[in-house]
Length: 559
Image (cartoon, rainbow, N blue to C red):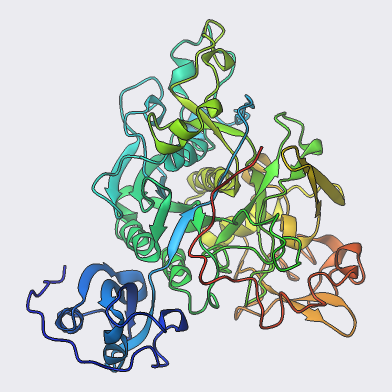
């Protein structure tokens, strides 16, 4: 822990914001304006680095070990002076992140896991770190089955003074990944529906990085990632869930959020990230393509989009949720999402009195939705939300079960197994109409919309193949003259075992004959025939879909 000096020296009057080390988004500010920044060094930050900031009127906030950095509040006029330190690599904004969700209509749509696994194969002993808005620490469904033993083994806030969920997002997310429905089980004779998480006996590590408004910062998220890495062996943290994101501002190779999640991946933690909810965004005339948010744009994480499962158990009628963000990723053009999972109108756990619950009381199902002797009064335990935020923890819970089954699996092997066994039976085109605006949105079963397909819990659980090598998401390459798209399987430094000609799985294991090496993916298919994405260089040119001034992902309602 660094000692924080209290001596403040007068700051020099300088021309600021012109050093190549200072991010362009920090230029042109009022000289005396206090800016929230992250300073990245070429070594672990030392006391004299903090002293230099404080001497120029700045304030130290927190260490960020995963990126050799620290978060500060710094006067704009001090930036160039600080950048002159040869130890400083970069000074970037401490950008705003937000939970990825849409608020669904108040219809009672049940979601549950088909309990085909024995009780001892439900993530027992596996820790899942949820970096979110906190948890309702008193919710009975975070306890062991019909016991008072809390499965929330660690809680810490990096954004405010309490790890409790004041927003209502984190509790819902944790319920999907790790929920154990004691509310219904407590009255088994009357239970007509249960709401279980994918890994209902996993240990929960509650790392709060979003505040009561669902907003956070890069530094809060990175600090939470640091803590998960530090606690890995104490709580056997093998999975990390981030149902949050912000606009992509730079290549994943430079993005500090991406650098941090890669540190977790290197530590042996499976990192699962929500894709974002920009699938309806046509601001740039690209029909929602290239709207993946950071850190879901990192090739090593599992990026998850959302599916509308039509509130039934028949997978054959599932369609992509129109709001689910699509690839390729801005700037780097990586193939994302990696997978999709049910995320529309999901009933999960409620953080009583949280902001979302009070703002959308109609999203609370009646007790009669899950108990035969229940009343029509709104439930105080459950809540309905939609979004890629809800899809991501489903994959996180499944990953935890796979790791319990075989603790030797690496993050790449888990990702490859999930992608290899994904279900790809979606129709070629899918439509959804917003009843409020009467706008119809069309989605396609292409690689940038559904990735490898919809996660298949049971198929992945019964797969014993072990991939060798990298499961990093490859880059897509557009041939403007031919109007075709190919994959560069060596784009991240190593051939992908999922997309390539793997020795274990033979050729083109994910996409059949459509992908092999660097062959054409679509040719002149209907999706790209109009040149909406490629022709205007919105994705591939300098005008990538990346709004650095936006600061975060908007939280909007979807009927």
